[in-house]
Amino acid sequence: MIYETDPIISRVKNALMPVDITEGDDAITRQTQRRAVVLLPLVKREDWQVILTKRPDTMPTHPGQIAFPGGRAEAGEAALMAAYRETEEEIGVPSERITMLGRLPSFDATGEYRVTPFVGIVDSDSVITPDPREVADVFEVPFSFLMNSDNHIKREVEWKNKTLTLFDMPYDDFGTHRNIWGMTAMTLYRLWQRGFET
Picture 1 (cartoon, one colour):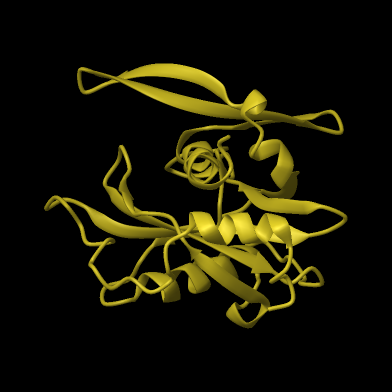
Picture 2 (cartoon, rainbow, N blue to C red):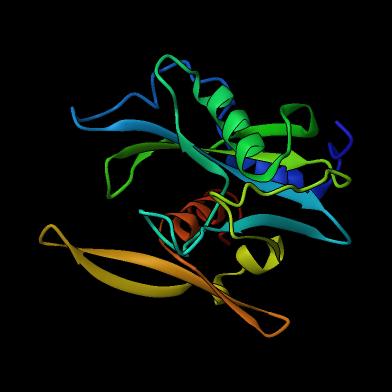
């Protein structure tokens, strides 16, 4: 792999589990759940960046939210194949333009999904073509910003009589404020915990 000696990518890979799911990590844990996937896409510019999307305000669920490419896995579809398919559908990047590095542990989202996050490198010369039905905007945030704990803003919420600790990652980009929160921020936070917490 072209980035094998890159120290950032080495740390990312050390934080991840293998791409292949052999122990049923993505299996649903309750009857009403569905399997879902996301791709945390890294791209090398001058520095490493994370590609993020903004959902349209017209979406029936999570309107306007900052997200990774991803969505529901189809019946019988392997999680990895779902991640490739959703990424191509949402931002137009096909699987042959992605070098998959590994995955984070699957987790139960607060909604109805069992989510498996993959991490991969998108070729820097890939053409990003968002599907306007699912993506209102595509932008990049420096990976170094997201892996800096100074930029993790703690927030506590009540959910089902429990207090949950979450971390938001607000980012100002040339006059545009982006509030990275919810599942997207917590996926980044889990990667930070596993590979970048000092």
